[in-house]
Image 1 (cartoon, rainbow, N blue to C red):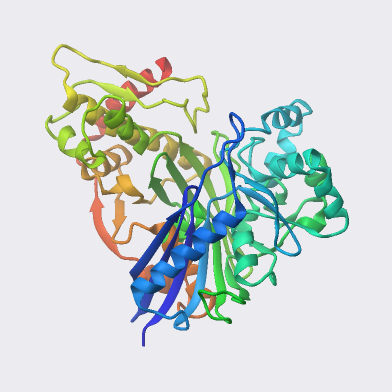
Image 2 (tube, rainbow, N blue to C red):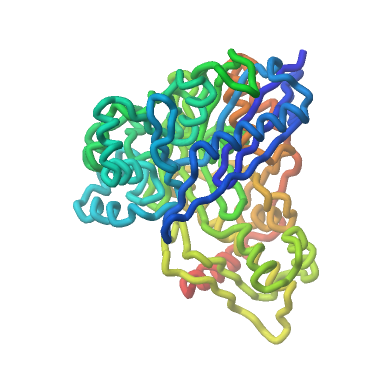
Length: 495
């Protein structure tokens, strides 16, 4: 008998709802809905979302997916949620938003982060949270709101204020305000959560700006029943919300990377790589983040995380900035008009370099051109530049993790590019696996929810449901790869 899981994948620019069918140990997508929501930019460097608009986008996308699947909602066995991380919202006990959500991209708290670093608090935060002091994370956003909006501090003192990342907001809405919860993966991105003790840290909350514990959600595992739907016009009462994880951790789970040393990379606008480090939280010495991947029962799995700012965006630049083609999908055909890049190297540092370099001052660079260089060489060099960045990221992970990578699993839009995936495997020298279902983020949420209600017995059953599309293996000799990496590093030094 088939069972159905509703996976809500709430992203930075829109919300996706997928209806997934579980039958005979296999999982498949049978319907999807997608709704965008508005981006608000009140000042330079500030990015906000309206909480009610987020909720409306989830409701609309869910209605569309149920209509496409021809399901009433009563056949949904469980709901899984994955979400943009770090985005920070406040609402009162009646569920009324008290300010627009401050998005992970927002940089308004850069000065506060610098002040905390100047006061020599970096090591305290890094050792307990695995994070660096950066406006990216939730803690300084919470402190800013409480300082700039004194009425919010008053609400907090009266215990009528609620804080949450977007997973918390969605569960609150789905349950009619009955559940104020988050999971460990999202909590680990706030700068307020001790990832070793798995609890909110009062000292860190104090250092950030006397953040009261009464506003913080209860932290739960990544797969359990957090509450049931209640009072909705698009879903019946009583459906369990049973799985939850931040988007990148959900993708790691959706790729069934359950063994230490397994890693995934999501190729989107940028590239996000995570490596499972098992039950040990590995401190990074190479500019990476240590984060909780997920918690199942009482067992916690940790991960190392790193990101590059520009991946698919370099293809968009070739399309929009240079007019090389009209559709980004055409880049592969153009790159294949030449057998190699002809010595051309393109460092896609259009917005600086992320991990492991962390050089915000770096700029994009094209070098090695001759009179024979043409558009094909530049297109190929752009794709190779993406792969070079990810290779450096995974090298740093292997050093921090103290073990060689065993396999890389890939997802995201650019993972459909055969030339890019082959070159990635050439550089890494390990098997690179592309799954049949590329929506790994939503798949991870579905797997977690399925575990939460018993549709999957354990991670072994989840692994058996994961389906491989294609394996890429190294086709270049080791000496050639070494020479190419050396040339790449020289180019990066000039960027």
